[in-house]
Image 1: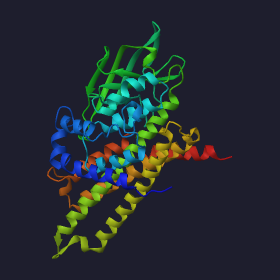
Image 2: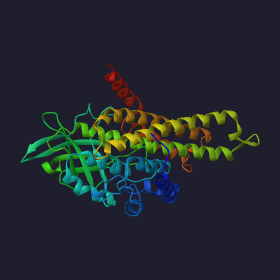
Image 3: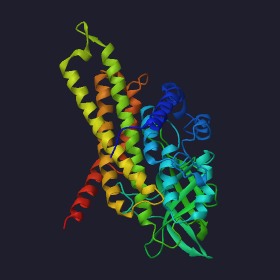
Image 4: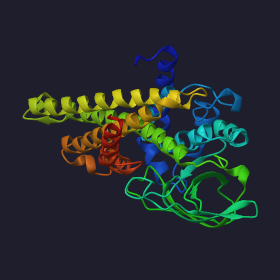
Length: 386
């Protein structure tokens, strides 16, 4: 498997770095995270209607660009580097894969063109407990007049207060899961923003009260949606790992710039052997994270392909668990060391390392902690033994 970027991928990387360096610099991030929406609507419009990033891995038949998840991973790494405040992870990395992998062609034809154009934002809502959804009771789906009525509550839905379309997880009376594509303004849906540690990423609580859904809103028709939800969350975890890798690299870059200027005993502290060793350790963790994140992105790309190999299901599970656990720990370590090597000022409001530290801690918990993913990985390995 070739991990070297081709000419087109390098152009995507360069374009993303150039745009985000201006549109998501420190001042822009601080302005966006303090706004009511949580992101700059004008920047999101540029991302969707000029750069076509939400359309990147949507097939051309639905108005997309028709590229792969690896190209999206390149964007995500740059978004992590610049702490982009935008509903990209929720729309392009959770809702879009759910629609692509679902069984409903009419839903793809209805929603994917708008997602590709950037005129619609979406998210995935699911009940979770102890990092996962399997142990959690999902909102109920009760039969009603040829469709269903949904009742229940979701905690900590990514961009749940601002999304235009909600992919809702619900549980039938017989225990089967279902995923429904529901406009956020539908009657019976109540959304409230939650206070968060990471101010650059918004979460919300969503309450459903007698929300009516029709059979044509189901992503899996009459099939159990458990496998679809699992695959969607694994792809989301891989996307988050790519973002965390870019953010970890930025933490190291900020640190190197600072220690190259800070003087101690009439010399830059970057010249001290102990400091060099710590930075070398950070670089090693980042490279490990980047390697597994892009390997996992390659697997996700094959799974999302129209002729995706069903045999890759187990490999996707393993790749997602490794990528998310490695990237979470690398980002957390780099963010913590960045504050330490800044001599404490990194946690003051004027410096950026504290923003990365908060994103690192919040992202570590999002879509499964490292410990949880390693438990899943151990279970997968044991299950595969003869």
